[in-house]
Amino acid sequence: MVRLTKCSLSIGLHILQLMLIYNISISAAVLTYDGCMSDSANSYTVGGWCFLHYTSSSWPLNTPTQDEAQSICLPYGTLAVGVTYKMMNTLQTRNPGGTSPHTWLALVRNASYSAQNQGWYWKTLLPTGAYATFPAIMSNIPWGPGEPNNGKGNEDGAIISQNWGVGDVKTNYISSAYGSQQMTVLCQFAPNQWKYLTSGHGRFAVPAYQIARTTVKGSNCVSQCHLSLFCVSFAYNPTTKDCQLYAVSPKDPKFSGNVIADSSYNWHIRDGMEY
Image 1 (cartoon, rainbow, N blue to C red):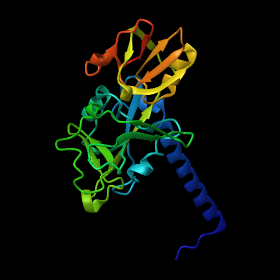
Image 2 (image 1 turned 90 degrees about the vertical axis):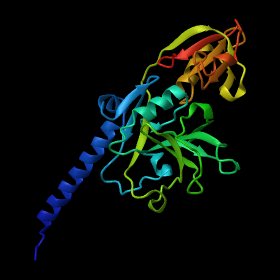
Image 3 (image 1 turned 180 degrees about the vertical axis):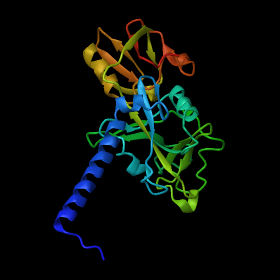
Image 4 (image 1 turned 30 degrees about the vertical axis):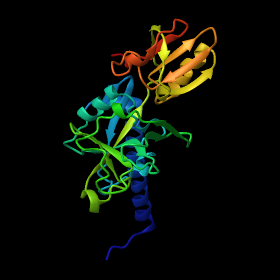
């Protein structure tokens, strides 16, 4: 029989506290922009953002759920949104699938829609406790073969897998439907500073591309784009102070045909989102 004295118990608790502090500090160091940039094996940059494939050997299989994954990257990052095809294609080709190909994204579906390829939108938890949302542009999502297909029923969440693409899955990713899997969370971190490149004149004609439209000073228009996870470009009219934020770039060949030539609006593209 082992007899614990007050002294040995105190030492044991102290060691446990140090272990917990160490593990927490490791996670905190990794889940930042600088931590993401320093982990070249599991991270990469797209459009200025740093994306990190994060997992932990302490997680039980098939965890976290998509809802639980929303808070793992906080407070310095968020669960990843891949607004443009350029971003999404990079996310799937750079996914370190050899370690864990089952990676949560902040892509969910409104189940009130009858068709499985309808109702998809980006929904990511912010440090404020609020959610940022924006309807997904379906042509920008590299779905896997036959996806989305609701193959297991109630598949209203999404994962991304290496060289395969995005698939719809149950948001709790239960083992009875998908087997026992080690899950990964894709975190997204923003740098402290960004450049916005002036690129000609015009604006988009398609309302679905527009994130927000406000009447503000030019500097406030830049700030609004900077603070939005979805903003790729914006058009600004310095005379009327009309600010239009977009989730696509006028230089993207997929959408350049929807640009209206308008010399009263100046185009600005988020650095790194050129084509």
